[in-house]
Image (tube, rainbow, N blue to C red; front, side):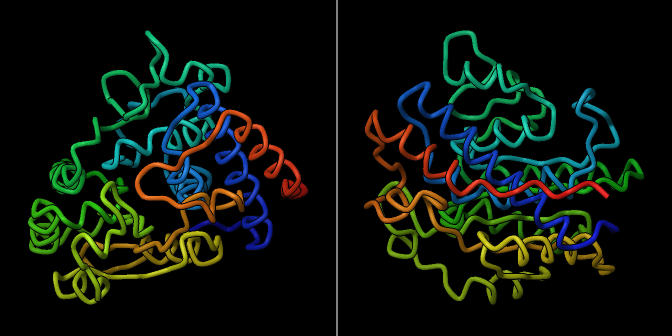
Length: 287
């Protein structure tokens, strides 16, 4: 358990989330596009994961004792790369190659290219089944590593997600933590209109999971949820349902009509960065 004073911890993670958002906007400007709405909305969860919770060795991304973080929603890669830079696995200089020819940072995550990328995501609904297999394998090897699966609410449409949820509970995978971005947006419109999934917490609980539902843009709630999930003594998987706002942190993007992809015009990238810069949180003083 993290022994850092809570307020110092929150201040540090707020700065981390700010940097993830800013790096994602800079990468989006390089290509003139990118899933920036999701990146801004998911930044707080990634900040807690990569700035606080995950056991990693930045200089040894394949270290056997690491916690695994699976990016099932591979199109969130722009945010994930920003988090990997925050963790020291990627450099800020390399982020500027995002989406370019011969880059290790394709627009959708690919494990064969990027250090720290555990799976090639994007075929939605595949992350949780893979996470179940990883958690089983690690348990057989006697590892105490956690396996995190990061996924979108659109993946709740996929039968493979629910088959994996059943099997995770059946096998008592207490080192498996699923993180669901409930932003209510997918390619064809609002997720709940495409295929209603509420009451979502009740569904996961009925499948045998320990369930928490939080505001995914409230660092206090996210930190507490991660701490609870990791400390739970029961041999059952745990899920954190995170209600988020696409475009979080940039008001004109928060309010923009959106589905899967937010339109950002060329001058707006710098406008968005300027808005973030005006709200830059202070780094906590070192003890």
